[in-house]
Image (tube, rainbow, N blue to C red):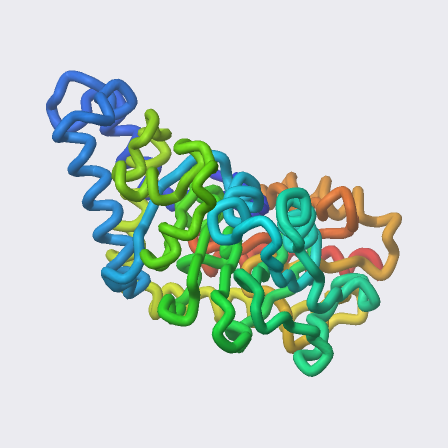
Length: 360
């Protein structure tokens, strides 16, 4: 079997050990004579998968009983709309910090149903920096404050949770969840699409403080209520069972690695290795302010943009795949989520050095 080094921003690489276990179990899961994809989500066997996955998430992230943990559908993008519909009433204000593409999309969806307002916008820096905290225009009575800790496309990361007073803090952690320890108690809601650090696409993790489950307007349809999903064990309708099962295997893998403290140190080393190579070179440039560089998504440009195509072609020949920057910004982007091994980043750094040598 030949495996490439996959730098995709999402759906992203999964741990090989997890894929091998799933491959072995797909035809006959736990001697049931059925695939896990064929098992009823209402069966005792699958409910055990679901309960174990939740228990492992709680252990890994240190989530208390004050929070509900939900495994939902619709991606993080669905939550852009469900959050304002559930956590605010008509006439309420929602504060939004804009640091790139995904926080802008969340703002636009919130604005479609509520009075969403921009507290600060990084547009003046072309979203290569986070607006200074003293420039934020906060609303003291806002229903909640929304931000995106890590912008997958631009590679901008807010490394510490913002301090916003008594306003509930809501974070789209799709591309940074479980990449290091986080103090969940500082947040009202954490949500994340699965396809970067959790598992395959199709599943969304929502961690919500339980007191917020009762905030939805009375006329909100049942299927759109977080409380309905929480009360139903995330099985109000048929869930994406295979994605849930595979994510559970990833949680086990994370625990076997030593948990999020060990994973966080590994991710820090990977990021430092790649940024170090970029900064030591006059051929490569990372556009993001050093204080808010992402650990997960590292965009960079070449001194001669006309070489982008050749860089990508030769990288693929070396098995370094999916390095093309997002179509909205161009350049190169390396996504180095949990499943990316340190030797994969080293292979990229070695290739970059050789490509620079032969093109300068």
